[in-house]
Image 1 (cartoon, one colour):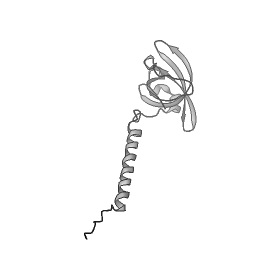
Image 2: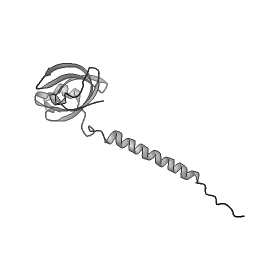
Image 3: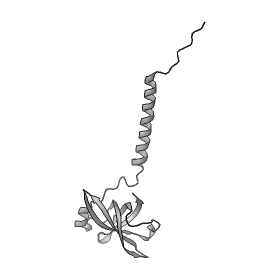
Image 4: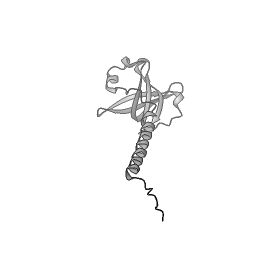
Length: 134
């Protein structure tokens, strides 16, 4: 009578396979979450320093994360001016950001949080270049 071959998979191989799958899943999550961020290479606006001397930031591009407080003004040509509250170092700072008329497709309402790529233009005004909900 012939003997049957013992073909069971060792437990260590099963554990290694599960660990490999978990590592691959974690790597994919990391890459999709952190590396796909379009604002990842842009520095955060130092709001406290900006408030003290906004003219020294002219021509630079920054990222601002904040919550909409109010719409301060509106113009057909220039766009909409909003007041944003940005928290840094445990303090709330208030900045005005101009959303140009080419960003009118974004629905901005009081209380919503946004990540905004801004450029500091003439006279130290923050002008949005890109905007997305946070």
